[in-house]
Length: 336
Image 1 (cartoon, helix red, strand yellow):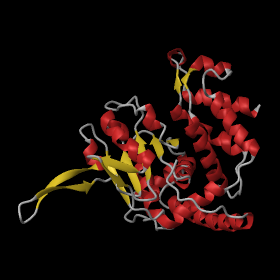
Image 2: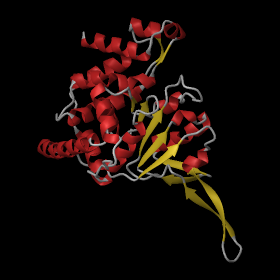
Image 3: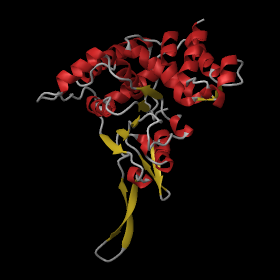
Image 4: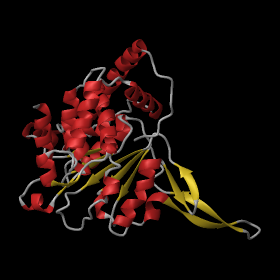
């Protein structure tokens, strides 16, 4: 869920003071991002929640919706060293991780030297990740979960913090490969990027077709981001919210007594979904100026946390049902 160094828990007063400082930082981040990204508030929020929670996000949408622009903007605003990989069908795992090259010194002795690939960044943008073959997609798996890679038996640690923000075209598009389930589960959130509202699209036309272009300023440093991520992990979560998370995640699994799920869901979310919900609910509370998450946070995060961790049965797909329909139904049941 994230590579964190452990620290002694803060007392209540210290958490309140640290949260107030973090609130000011988050407000400044939102303000800076809004200078470049118009509208798409929920997309910006969910992508930021994934980073503030110490995780990775998958942005799904058709081309031309500023997914790439959002990721590069976040890299600049959060003060992270970022790299971008454009995924293509002929991309090889070594193009991501790096490779060994042979050196020869003056005496003629030969030795191998590892040349680091673009994965060695604090923010990695994996652009159109589903255009590459499954073998290449899987090259990211170890780095996303374990924060290091292994090449020729040698371990290489990645920079901290390390976040992957991947963009993906809808799977119906030609020349795309579905991501393996194991890799989808490594993404804390799946963020769906829809077409902008009319007012936002008008602003895009006016602001982006002139001679000047707004460039965002760095608000945080990598060290400050790590402090906020640690603060989020120290925020208290009430038993009611923990129970709501467990109830929702378990209700999305077949065989747990939910008739709708048993009928429509082939396989459901594992414990990693609950971990993601716990972290993101805390981050969402802080994002909205609260010191503890509520059950409303859990319901609001159900779709981005669960939708890429579930699969429908063939019969449900044949009826035209979507994973989102199932999640909406589970949230309505939870709300009673």
